[in-house]
Image (tube, rainbow, N blue to C red; front, side, top):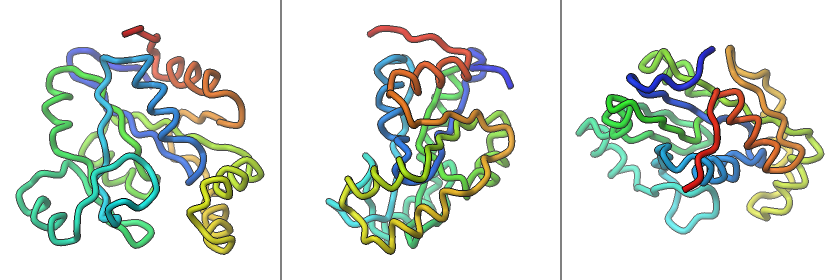
Length: 186
């Protein structure tokens, strides 16, 4: 798999189980590569609910935006609806590097529309995931156990796998390496 091709843009989905550090790595990537476009997901999660940095919408607004063609892709998972804004198409057309927090479940749908999609799959040991999920304090022990069970899925086909049990600097260096990119200071 090749890295970003400047004349056609490159779309990168960062996926992995809850608590693996997707948002933390994406934030570090944004600082290392200020030229990259980091796209916020749209989620039908209640406003003010803890979790990733995202745009919160109601079910009604989600449906209205969907009908207007404002989403490049959308999917449902864990009782919520998710979308990536259609604005990514303009960025890709300009040859930009576009990165978003994706979902393993939605990858076939995303790949159908964006065949050159690159996937970065973050993993971590079950012990590390459990510690991180407990530290967040958002879920019950039963909910954490269910998330840990889902974490055991195999990586998607052609994914760049990064084990995120170590330092953020190590994970970032690995991500830059697998995407054939280098850090650019702001």
